[in-house]
Image (cartoon, rainbow, N blue to C red; front, side, top):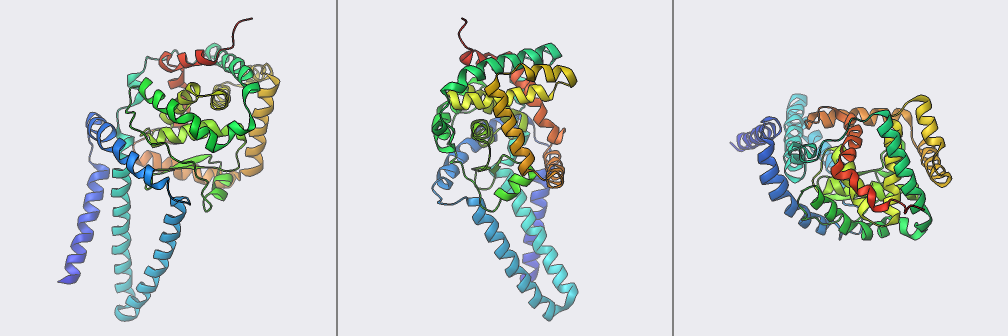
Length: 360
């Protein structure tokens, strides 16, 4: 009887996880009851707690998982001796499925349901078509802003700690601007010891720990990258699971912030718009950039070339693409490219006026 109860519990968890993952729920319901109701308060509480940890919670979680896995293997070895190979395989499969079900349920309830909220694009003024002329214009405008901001950026302003202090208010301002909940606890930027080598080789600049709602950042970026990377991860933390939305909201927060964050955001915009151009048009646009801006973009490119392993990067992005598609992001990792369309919306692009240099 005891064994039946344990199996029944396993089946219930597996069925619950399957239903939660597969059953379609109207976006309006997710937006109202989860994204604007339950999640903001959960995030404020959990992030406030994990901010107090002296080390990255993800490191503790990964270490605990490895230890638990070793203990479970030893226990399965004992089952093998008592009940044979089939008994051990059955026990291992049951426990593995049960663990996976728990992970799925916790992931979706703690953060993952944000993938199913109403798209941000539906609340913004439609952007103009991203023509070559528009993209070149955006690069020129971002370059002028970056060139005027760069002299005001001090080295001490580019640390993650300084940027976290500077971006807290602007992030709430950005959330208010796009009509999203402003109950938001800024996450303390963490450089995870166990994941940082992977970040470098895979080309990952940061990520959100969905189980601890903590902000993880690559410690060895070029300092001018820090502002946008932190704001992007905070936008995830604020409930924008979609990569394009996180980039757009993060960019907007940076534009509301001081020179260091705004400069970082303009570099990001130049790179995004440039990536959408081809051949000689892109070369001409980048040749016309301010010399200091070109130097910083070259430093970022050199950092990527030195750190990134193409094989690891391709494998990591294939896995992430499948993960995004499993969470109903139809374009997978290509969703990063939609950020430019959101930023080009007049609702967001108007923020560029904040750092437009004065006419001479």
